[in-house]
Length: 68
Image (cartoon, rainbow, N blue to C red; front, side, top):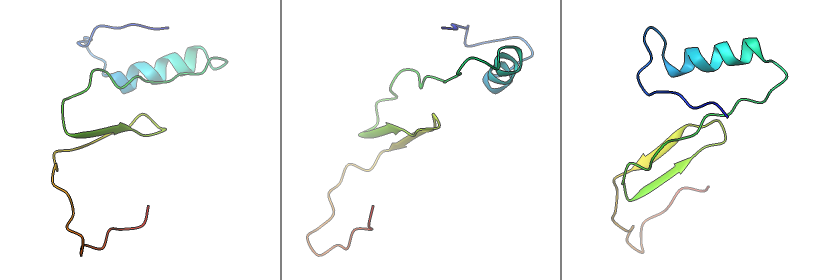
């Protein structure tokens, strides 16, 4: 487990992940999503991307929803 400060001088989070992967290629590196941001809908994809939506309305019965 690697815990870091949110503010790193001269390096962003992606740079840190790159450096850890270069120095320890035998280890699996995953990135946590952090604290929830409080939107009505929120999920984290398999690559760590956070998807959020402020839409809190329901689709009417005649609405055609996209296939998932």
